Length: 289
Image: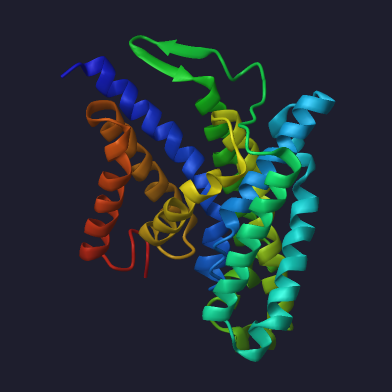
């Protein structure tokens, strides 16, 4: 076995796992903590990619910086979506099939809107860190993966700090466990859920910029990530940020090794086979309780 090839595959998998963590952290909030199956989450990530593309191509703003600027707009979008979902489904108790159909509708509406505005051609951005690589001996660290991985870890760290240190953050963690106790602490569960869902959509802004830095995007590319994000969320343990990171890195390494030595067509099958094996041994996921 070529050790340098193996080492580079591991490094690429680690960096790819950082990207997977960024695209999954929002699902860990909505699905893992709020029990909302937002199947449209990857479509909002692609929307974030196009926002970064417009800022980069027309305004000359760095795509990742543009995504940070756009976070408040994505947060308000999430708050609005949750308000509609709450009024139309949750308050009436229709959270399962009809709620899932609602997010499927959002998925297709977002995709069709992007097709009408931007067409079906692939779009990409330019930035100083997209082309070069760092060389550590025989290992290559492409900056187009290293920078997104660092941004992803920073975003997850800030979210974890917010959830563990602030009153609203602790309320978000509590709303998934005992809403009655949360009411006794003078917090409205619906308001907390609205804030939490807004945060989950706000992460799509940064994740979208990271996505278009790593690869060109087109509107239907979101379908490639639906299975991955929910698989990582379940594998890591519902609502666990450390579990999400470990599961994302594990999946990234498995996909990278499989793609390097057996071809890219095998990587999804091996990755999801690994998921099924893990859940057979530990059904609650790596960090589930």
